[in-house]
Length: 313
Image (cartoon, rainbow, N blue to C red; front, side, top):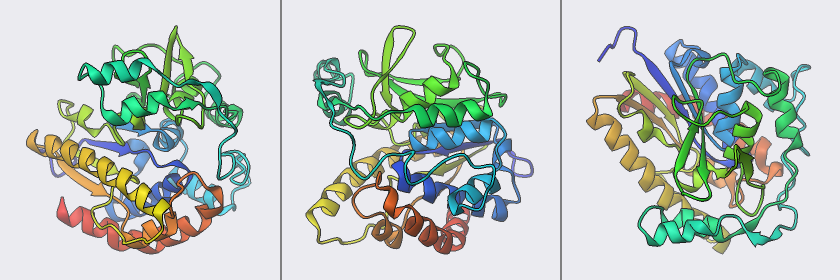
C-alpha cells in the first residue's frame, strides 16, 4: 500500500436530505484533516443523496461551495432546500408496484429482502425536475462529468442487480438520468427509464456499494455512510425504533463491505453518524425541516468523528 501518496476512493452513501447535510459537514472536516481536496479522489462512488454529491464533486464543485449552499450563504447556489427536495411526506404514489420482479429475484436468491420489499412499494410520483436542473447546471444536458471515475449507483428493477453508471462497461446514461435513478427512493420518487431498463435507488441493494472497490487499484477508501451507525441511540418513539431497525440492517451491509475492502489490503476510513447525530436525524431522513439542525450537529461532531475514523483506519 502506498502511504505517502495513496490512491483514494471516496464513497458517499445514501441518506436522504438529512444524510446529505451530514455528509457535506463530514467532507469539509475530512478535507481539513487530510489536507486533501475531495474532487481529487481517484474514484467517486455515490448512492442516492450521495450520488448527488458525487456528481457535483465530479463536475468540479468544491466542498466549500456545497457547505456554503447548505448554510444559505452562496449566491451561486440555485437549490432551494425548503422546496426542491419536497416535504416531509411524498406525493401520493401511483397504484402500481415499483418493481414487482424484484420479489421473484429475491425468491431465487438473487436479490435481498430489502430489495424485494422495495419493489413491492407503490411507484413514487415526486417531480425530479429540480434535481435534473441542478445537475444540468454543472454538466451540459446529456453529458457525464469530466472526472474520470465517477460511479452513480442504481438498481435495475427487472434483474435486481446494481448498476454503477459511469463505470467501465456500464450502460451509457446522461448524468441527470443516472442521479435521478440513484435517488429514486421507492414510494417517493419514480423509477427512471434508461435505454429500456427501469432503475431505482441504489440504496435498496447497498447503502454504499463500497465492495465494488475491492479489486480496484486504490490504496484507501474513504467511506461516508449516513445510514450506518455502530453507536446507536436509544429512542422511545416507535417510528424512530423502526428507522433504527433499518439502520441496523444497513450497518451490517457496510460492515461486510468494509471487511471485504480490508481483506483486499485497502485502508478504510469509515465515518458514520454517532448517537447525537441520530437524535438530530429523528426518524425521517427525508424531512427538510430537520436539515439545518442536522448540519449544525454534524459540524460540531465532525472534528472528533473524523479524527477517530482516521486513527482507527
